[in-house]
Image (cartoon, rainbow, N blue to C red):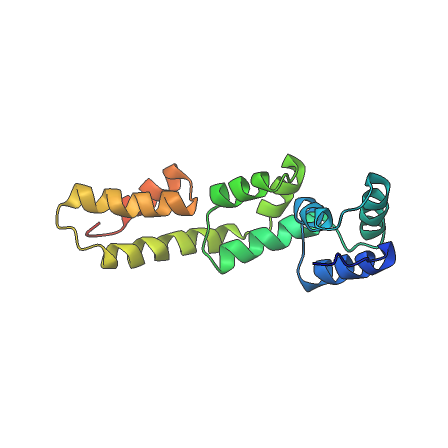
Length: 157
C-alpha cells in the first residue's frame, strides 16, 4: 500500500471542514491530526490556525454539547459534566455550558422522564419500582436530590 503525501495546506482545509461540520473539542481535533504523520511544529501551526480563524472554540463546543445532549438525549447536568470532563474541557467552560440549560425546562424534563419510566416499569413492589425509576434517572445524570424529590411527588411511584 502506498502512503499518500498531503501538504499542510490540504490538511488545514480538511480539518477546517471537519470543524465546520459540527463543533469539535481540542481532543477530537488532535486525534484527527494524529492520523496525519506530522512533525510537532506543523501540528501546532494547524491548531493555531484553527483557533485564530475560530474553527475551534472550546466554549462554543461545550455550550452546544450541553444543549444538544440535554434536549435530544435528555441527559442530566451530572452526565453532561462527566462527558465534558472526559473531553478535557475546562471547569470554567463546563460551568458556562450548564448555564445554557433552562432550569424550568430541566425540571419539567425530569418529571416527564419519571412519569414515562414509571409507566414502563412493571414491578409491583413499590420500593423496587422506585429504585428502578431512580436508577434510570441517576444513570441519565440527574442529581440524586432532584430525582428522589420528583419520585416522591409522583403518585403510584
